[in-house]
Image (cartoon, rainbow, N blue to C red; front, side, top):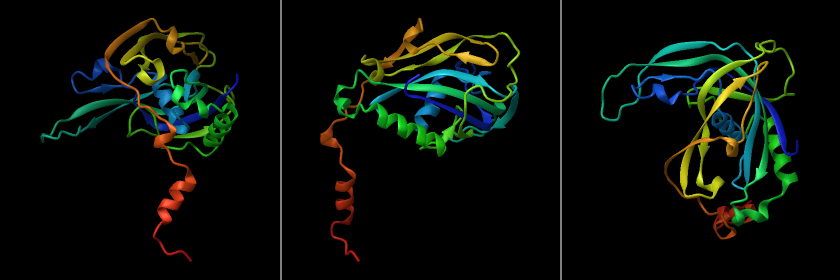
Length: 240
């Protein structure tokens, strides 16, 4: 597929929070990553508002294991609360994703250079991403490496199907939909021989509005070139 990248992401812990478990202050992870969590990882590797990343597939490489920890959530009004968070332990995923240009960002039409963005994305994968990588939450540090999707042995390669039931798929934001509202998507996740093939966001039928929102406008008037920033930084300084 055009504009596609493939990579491996792994870490000691992951927490893809099931929202139903947050009501009592506890957190319990889904067994597998959500579309939105993986999209966040891809955007940490490389992102610009000109493009929209589409996560195609994820391969669960290591066995699904959980571990509970006693945590002290930050309480700004004081307190000494103890909560139990249940994490996934020793995780490794192979991810396949591609990008398309955002049709709702006509203000960025001048930046629609497919070859440029694809090559930058591949270089970003090779160096482990442009920003820090997390598996669901900030405390779950992760690492990215390039890989060939499907290579190596996986824990569920010989398991025909596992149904994870209805779970969160992701979020719809105004800058990607053109609508001034935020929405949450649900879907029914199934894994076949260790691989989950995601529905596209527009294919999800269980969609609920969660509030209003607007997209930020980008245009050349509020952007500066590297040369302009360089000149401003050195203005008034003595040079050798």
